[in-house]
Image 1 (cartoon, helix red, strand yellow):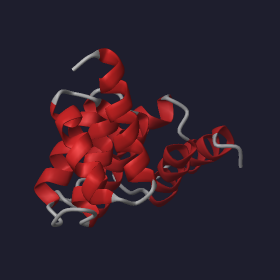
Image 2 (cartoon, one colour):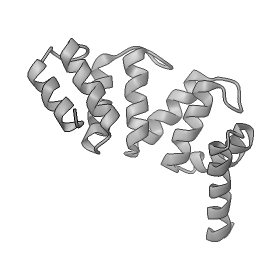
Image 3 (tube, rainbow, N blue to C red):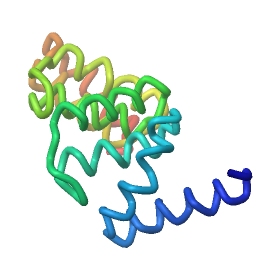
Length: 142
């Protein structure tokens, strides 16, 4: 496949995802996820997690979310943090949740900053630290 046709294919897969044609999106994006495309891995994880265009599969959702997060995809890092925080698709692990939210927050993801602030405010996965919580809320623009 030429680089141009690959880009058109990828754009078509992303357009299918955005248009909520998830069966088509899964068919197009999964091979790219398997080739290591972090954005495709994240989208495939979302589809497996929510049973969009496929049967829900928590193990596959976790596998793809983690693969994308490990490549530095901020939204996937946030998603993985959420999985660990809620015990969704994996065992609940607030300490790991904090690590992944921090990675996404380091990339400026506001949702991760506010989630981290909340965790410090409540002492969830970390020692309760109201000062750190205030600092994180401030960074997030609150």
